[in-house]
Length: 171
Image 1 (cartoon, rainbow, N blue to C red):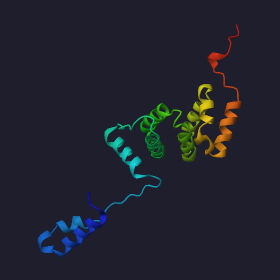
Image 2 (image 1 turned 90 degrees about the vertical axis):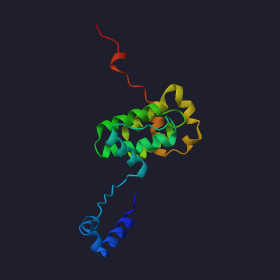
Image 3 (image 1 turned 135 degrees about the vertical axis):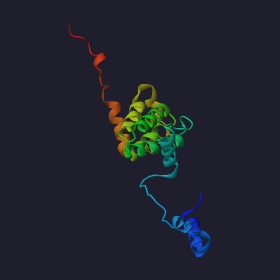
Image 4 (image 1 turned 90 degrees about the horizontal axis):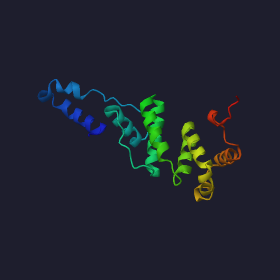
């Protein structure tokens, strides 16, 4: 792929050789369309473009922290561009990938990116009886933002919400 500068240099070279190029000069001298997308890194944007062209995501390795963070960035782009199918695919991958090794990093990143649904999923994962003691003993727990630590502790102290099926029937 040629850079913008290389294409401009070629256009200038063609304009100097008018006798050879003729009409070709006009198409080569057209300014390039350059679109700047705020808050989009190259790799997540590449995944988004791949999805737009193929309607699929080539999922990275499940559970690896960097790969989950990549799909979180793709999820943020999907939300920004209102691509609901991509949102759902990303959400499914991330929720399935959350485990004891990455839950705190994913939760911190979800909090930073303001991805409330993912943050909620992580918090619920952390406060599960089978996970809580292991998670709070991790070194990463000490480095969480104080607001997240408070949220985890408060959530753990709250009684679990009863679902409709748990309530006794009144006959």
